[in-house]
Length: 218
Image 1 (cartoon, rainbow, N blue to C red):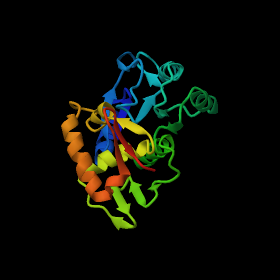
Image 2 (cartoon, rainbow, N blue to C red):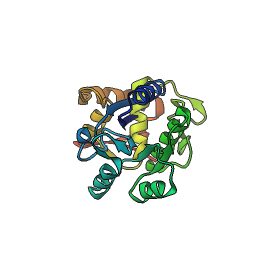
Image 3 (cartoon, rainbow, N blue to C red):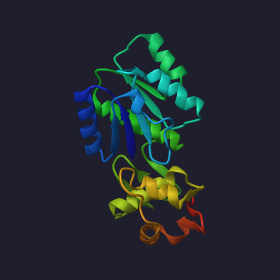
């Protein structure tokens, strides 16, 4: 999971990046509104943590711009503003959640998992796709109740396919999501990982759509 963090406080930014790394999240940290992307790429970012009080602008303005541009990536507002009007403005402006500083980092991580889970249309931390169960937070997967011995890359691939179970996930999208901070994963490498994953969860569960990508049967 890749997080875009927009926060100007140095101590908080460092602490959040350290926490996200422990939780096996990758993250990209930006401290100014001017450095924020004009539109957030859903192919790379799973969730945005957005401070409202930035040194050169308002997080509200970024949020409104993204939503007007049809950016659907989950956004959690993190701010010291505790007034109900500010919270309502954030939620009405398109925020998926609102966290007041100071906050417990464990709670924030739980909220990140919750908004990403909702965006993946899953009702609980355990994603159920027939006999296949995936728990992204615990990095575990089971088939018919038996634990699957997946490599880190195989597990990551399974999660990315499960986000859009029943829909085709393009190879170029997978190549970016599997390595959000580095060079996209080579298509040939993806094919190898898919082949290995099929051996463990069943060939029929991952379908190749020639020239496009892969589909995880729901």
